[in-house]
Length: 495
Image (tube, one colour):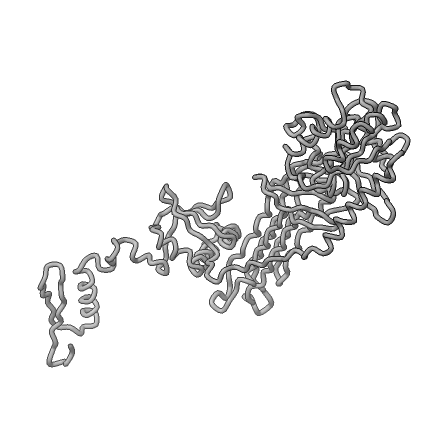
């Protein structure tokens, strides 16, 4: 059974917001005391929190679906519904969060770091909160917003200062066991190490962590062996220590050749070119190993490497090696202290940002997008005519109808609010505010004057009803431009 997992897919579903309450206060002698429906509670969030006691993502491998609790509906007598509880998911230090498209969302480094994986839905407003001077007794409330649903990929990249890299059976596990309290599995066959091992090393006053990753072989960057699966664990390391086997029994291998192969795989993986390198020539406790170390040491130094002959079995040369690691760590930490702190850039919303966008589609439909608009639609109870009217008023006030009209929408045009499967589709019915009275005529014309006689007939009807006019007649100077002339009654003095 697996005990270490460093990559999982997490399905996070935040809690739904509670619905608002529709209630009218009733007391003795006050049958209609006014609206008193409370608001719904907020849905619970799903939060990822770095915990120093967690070292693997195994829990999410077995149960990847996590759901937060929803908020409760509001109550009468001005009582709001309780909010849902946030779901806290602990992750190891160094967890990287990606979305379903592969975009990095967060890099969780440092104990206590928090990332909201899925945000809970807003609670719906009750009819008390919806009441105003113009809407004294709303007969509707807003629904709770659904919680956010996200498919996330979590990857663990070990947070270590030094990474030990090398061929299988080069002695990396023995080395980390000799310089730290780590106790990895050690055996005389390749790929004994199946998971990264971390050890804490103390060199003088400097304390740092060392990571031992599974052995690399030619083609590791293309997926051969276990190298590609665990190379991500060396990305955060300050320096790399090449552990070269000087006592190998394979006649076609030597330390210099092993170094070239490993460097080629690291170059193919990418992102590790600027890491300092240290060479540890291991197994000098063997006669052949000591001889091989003496033969290749100068060649490696000529390439610019720091070379340390060591023996993990006899602990020879380990003190010099650990202090060399400590010097690199001290230099890196000193440079980090003088670096300028990362600035937080605030990008406020532009003053001319309408908060929504309208796009005309090829199929003569229109798509309206915007966080505010989508939330309004989701919170509308389409079974209630008053709630639909409230939504129409809000959208008209925001300018959505004007924009639809400007882009050529007509009565009956299909309008989608939102994108994807959660989009709400309806047929647009324009209001007067959007210019509905002009939609039945061509540009430059007005539907109110579609018949030149109808308007005059209406005027004459009004005059007849008030019995002001005694005589009237049509005088047509132009067939397309009728004029109405009302003659005066001189006796009554009415024009």
